[in-house]
Length: 305
Image (cartoon, rainbow, N blue to C red):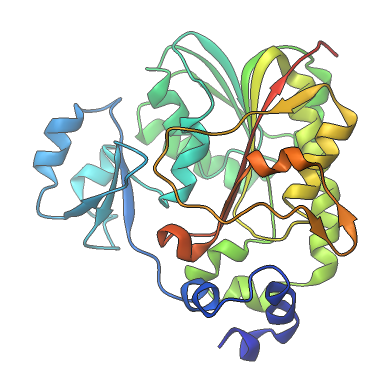
């Protein structure tokens, strides 16, 4: 099917994962997932209230649940900000940011706000979040979701994410959930396969490196920087992390304690070798956990810049 939609993409992906299972799950419809917002209600109360719709729990996120319906915008729980539509794999980055109440946090590409509201939830609405997006329309959606979810600690900015390299050593934790080629989102819509072009992968990789560099500059020494994408191309994933390791005093920390199946990191691609340290990144292919494709790296800043 994918070969018929975009053969260039199909041939590219065969270099990354040539298993039948990978391509089967890449076009298989996603499960419906929601996250319960404990800023609004106690978790146990919400579970009881939504018991007719909940069909399972996301194993790595206690607030995440598989839902029996996809069109739940009319539910009062949605309108009240008790639930947020969020893909299961996308719940992982905030889980590893070492969030605590009172922190100062930067979400450098925040819209539409799923991770921003999750961050606020783990900070218990205590501290400060700078939630940024370069697109004014998407920023308005971000504001709407922040307000609906009762987040009172987020300030929304509309800037190129590269701006934040000016705010050096200011943030306890930084999320760089970078714009990417969206291969993982083919499960939501085939438009991502139709629109994919190889030249965009290379231009996005340059942008991703710049955004990750900004996140590193903005983090305090000892602070955590989480880099994530919803794609599988090594040019946008391992290569970006390898760039950070080569140019900044940061280290990768292995993510442990989450019941997540992963595919092994790619250490060489198109003749370019990456640091052995990228083995510590999480490369999640759709068939691993029946989710979107996702890539996540947890970095720690070692020195002031």
